[in-house]
Length: 366
Ligand SMILES: Nc1ncnc2c1ncn2[C@@H]1O[C@H](COP(=O)(O)OP(=O)(O)OP(=O)(O)O)[C@@H](O)[C@H]1O
Image (cartoon, rainbow, N blue to C red; front, side):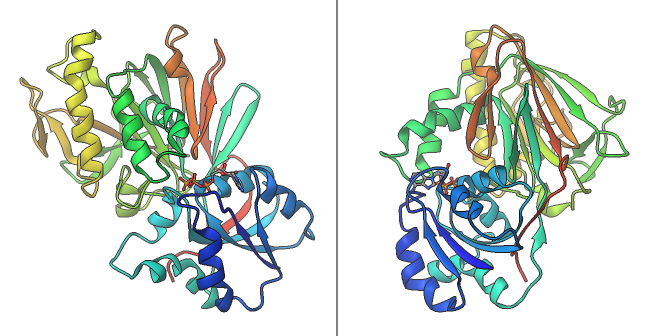
């Protein structure tokens, strides 16, 4: 069965217009077209369809996809993605911006479906906090990214585009997050870390097979299926450059105390380090060059492919656990595909890749 689901509230609110003008003529065989009126509508609509393999043409962003996957984890669904949301991370990773005209750019997953391409099985991260768990097809994060998502939601009306993420990043840039993390091994192997000198992932020398990390953290983010969170924000570029082993995520970690210039966790140190946080995030917008950043060993200046320690710890792993310091409220936020959850006092968050079998797939490049 072929259906279309339109979230008219996503992104710049153009999804209905786009469907009527550019999609309907391409999909004469469509069985149902459903426009949501609120969160939860897509789930209700699918519940009332026969329990058979389903192809959904989804005009939304990553959030509506996240809602469907979580509400109906046992359904057999192939998604045809039409990027109408704010960030469209999964779509932009499958189809990086490449100079196509604006309309044709958005029709690439539709074209793959119409060409009878085989849909690609996606990985899912299970993010759990105490007894609740959530499935993510793009990102699970804590620290700065989770706080950006938390604060940006209140800016959605005034700033419907990706600029709201930049405003929220500025509001949060001096924060560090006190926590301890455990990085879980690649299945059957150890935790791996990217080594810019050899341009390869290598087994982490301290992993046995998992790895303990002490905070404070500025940034802690994991991705599956994607190398970017916006069309030009390529935060985990190696996901597309060095093929990941099955059931793994890429984890990007920034720990300020690794900087030779930073000696303690003080207000002054946090202010000094802001510039480096911006350098790293700025480089993610420059095609992901932050993965090759190193510190100059005495001054702490950021260099590219120097001899000092890496700035970003870029791990490849089977998942992670996060134990926030009970005194640090902001370290208790976890983002799963844009939805923000709070870790209760005394609890921890965990993220494990492909823990639950499922039959979700997407139409990617032919
Ligand atoms: N008609 C609606 N009105 C308001 N919210 C809706 C409606 N339909 C769905 N939603 C909810 O809107 C939220 C955001 O949707 P979506 O992710 O598609 O857009 P976005 O946030 O602009 O894009 P992205 O996730 O790519 O940044 C989802 O949580 C979804 O459940």
